Length: 260
Image 1 (tube, rainbow, N blue to C red):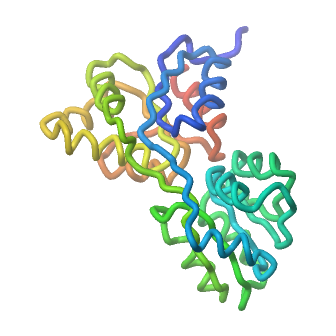
Image 2: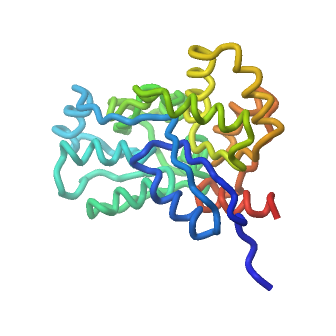
Image 3: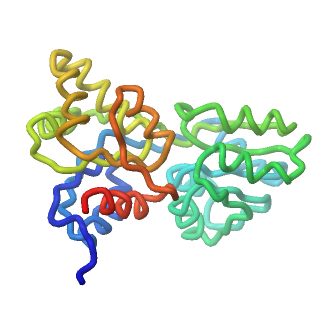
């Protein structure tokens, strides 16, 4: 009996180009054809708040990294040395990026979401603790607000921006591919990967937006890395395939289960 796989299906990767190769390798290893069309573009930012955190890291009790980009941006300023305070991370890839800089997390939530991290902090005294949070300013407020409810003093530092790619031609081509059933599966790994697709089509080809939504419902399998991303799809009644554990590998395994 042969292992189940993607059976040569065409699978679109919409995550930022810097993070696409690892997912592409998983898709190829599982017998699929990866097609990289980023709908999200990252750019590192050296904000005043990030400089402050780097210069005063000894004053903080915790630093929380919610994405690999936040780690990269921090260490670009901080240099290759140990972080003296405790470190929490969300997600396997964030942990891997941290360990590239010879630092190791003290806390990783079971569920790779802001809510999952807040649950992990429930047994930890955060009253009057200073927490550094380098991330994109477009991220949800659930994490900093939840930490503050537990008594923490949170400093958010813009470490990168995550927005619509400057060249939107690839996104418009992706819309056409979905509408014309030229692909089999499209994957979304953050809310902005789907929101940006919708925003570009609404702005540049508004007459095609409803056609695109219908095509996502009927023409392709939509893979979502987890419920926060999937919620955006569900707002348009688009069904998604989601894994129990929120990693790209588990997402692909869940898609394989769905197509076999």
